[in-house]
Amino acid sequence: MRAHVSLSIGVLTALFSTSGWAQAPESGAPPSKPAFNEAGYRHLDETLTALRARNAKAFAIDPVRGIDEGSYVRIGGIEQWITIRGEDRKNPVLLFLHGGPGDVTNPWSFAIFAPWEKHFTVVQWDERGAGRTFSKNGAAIASTMTLDRMAQDGIELSEYLRNHLSKEKIVVVAHSFGTVLGLRMVRARPDLYSAYVGTGEVADETKNYSAAYEALLKRAQVSGNQRALADLRRIGPPPYSTGEGYRVQWKWANGFEGADQFLFSTIGFALVSPGCSVQDFKDAEEGEVFSADRLVPQLRSSTPKQFGLSFKLPVFFFQGDSDFTAPTALVRQYFAMLQAPYKKLVLIPNAGHFAVFMRSDVFLKELVARVRPLAVRR
Image (tube, rainbow, N blue to C red; front, side):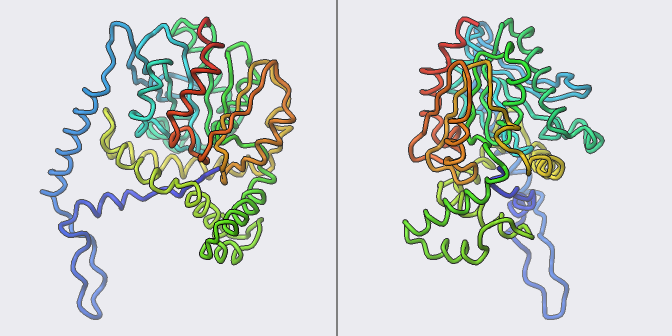
């Protein structure tokens, strides 16, 4: 589920030095630290500020018809950060649940979701323990970091959105870890939602890494990738006693899906996102570590039965056809077990775990054709 390892804020520090790292020390001398270049930092900060201003203008929403809000809302007894953007208030409301745990999308997704905002009012939420919500509340909320509490947060947020935006029901689109919360939310309160859409769907955590390993090994064999084969055979199938095996799986999952470049690009988008800053980048990283430490252990024994087999609203899975992080084969099996008034599995071609971002145009086309009609009168 955690498909990549967070990148340190130290990556940015290197940008602020005169020529990367300081000169190598003489023999026997301690290693030198990066040389901080104040003038270089100021120039970079000015450039980023100008780019944020340009993007704010380029992606501005007409306030007469549309909505563009970012604020803390009191949910579950704490202040939690949400953004609401859409070009027409009459459009259906779509609540996007980010992955991770703790992997907020608010800091970098402005360009990706802009086309969505023509058809939906898009709400993003920095979940408990993540992003600006983590920054606001800190580690003091550690004891409240449970799946049940966070699903209840999502329900409370949904009720707030119904009242605030004058809508009877809303659409939930959930990615990766977000699907764990989303399924709990729509099972508990189907009356709040017109449809559920899962992508990078978490289907069976007890089999996830085993299924991913087999899929990765098969892909390496078919493609003749000897480096991948050597890496995968070296670690062998899970379970693993250390984190090395999981890191190798994430490495090749991202590699085969072509996600590496996308994941690095999110850093650049975060730095030039309207209203965001380097501090948001740092908060996102720290929240991801904090959330994973507390939530991943709660997921390890989760099966399809615990995620839910019976639902009282339309259920869609928009799944990359080659997802090696939340294996597509397991999603197919889970989908076959589900009972719902209407259900549909849509495979997005040439896509993996990050299909919602990397094939956002295809994803949106499916949303507009299949899901929006269910919500437009709500």
